[in-house]
Image 1 (spheres, rainbow, N blue to C red):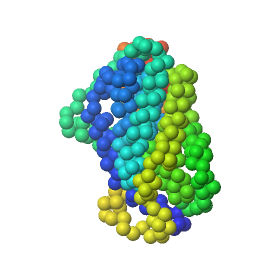
Image 2: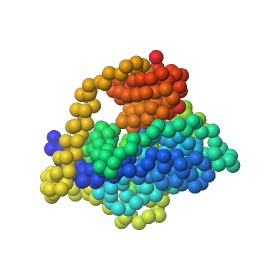
Image 3: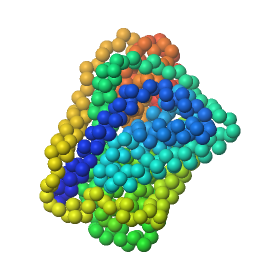
Image 4: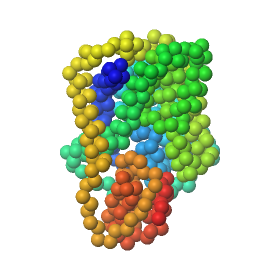
Amino acid sequence: MQEYVYPFIRLLNEMSPYLLLGFLVAGVLHAFVPRGVYSKYLAGNDFRSVAYAALFGVPLPLCSCGVIPAAMSMRREGASRAATVSFLISTPQTGADSILATGSLLGLPFALLRPVAAFVTALAGGVAVGAMAGDGKTDDVASADNAPMRRLSFWGKCREALRYGFVDMVQDIGRWLVVGLAIAGFITVFLPDDFFAAFSEFPLANMLLVLALSVPMYLCATGSIPIAAALMLKGLSPGAALVLLMAGPATNTAAIMVIGKVLGRKTMFVYLTAIVAGAVGFGLLTDYLLPAEWFPLAYSEHTAACCGVSDAGFVKTASSVLLGCLLAAAVIMKYVKPKKKEMKTERVYRIGGMICNHCKNNVEKALASVEGVAAVRVDLAEGAAYVEGDARAADIIGTIEALGYEYSE
């Protein structure tokens, strides 16, 4: 039991300070960056819009499930197809929290390489989609009706940043973060030390193996870090680990299906091709062209073999305890429902596909902008929207489906 628990605790101690800082940065970005900024600069299929979308996406800590409704909402508000794909590729691969956590566990070169690789891959994918759209700077963008943004004071924005970073974000990625740490612990203990040694002379085979496993499954950008660290201890090359860090968070079966449905199969194919080619290309670059001494694993083999949890330090220990409390609170809040506010003439719309607070927030904002809606409340657990007002049902259903979700009777 100790052989498994101690690696888990060490990983948590290494990552928790950076995770907490990343959650705070996420909240600040959410509360202080005006909502209309994103769509304002992303309306064209040209290189500039694609580059802006990639730059906007790199620091945002959205996972591959959370980025889908965000991207569909941007598309609805005026973003072009090319910019939307660029945002879809760059955003889930990185984030303020995952970049900091990568530096703490895998070292500075990895922390710098991840956002660069995500940005370049997003540029390639977005430019390819823009070329498919033709020479025009804009394309068939859905209605850009924007819900009015709440006006908050500075301190109101600070409270919103804390709520979003340490409540919504923890609820959304906390489960996957714990899963990633747990998998890393199992890998460290149970995977033979020479598992990837058989492929050590064939880095490309390592990468293809990792790629086949990571593309269809869900891995968040932060939760994938301890998995990559544990696999490197078992002989995985740095380039193959980078493939995991890029392809795992950027894709999953659900995201692929939604993109195909909303943006079209050709766009989905370009999206997948850009991610796969970018991951393998940067993986080969890492293994063959970059110095090996740039990638010494911070979570070293000596540390993994040690049985104690010494030298954690007060800051790391306190950060781990605080993070544990936030995760516990997120679980409690998920299953303890608040008292419902009674609406005068509410109608219920069942929605399929909502899986995180980003989904909930995007649906609420979109439905609030529909003409005739007086009030709207979305219940994530029930998968339902409660709408008050005299809005037409067809407009409500159309808005739900435009965001990539499914309406059911």
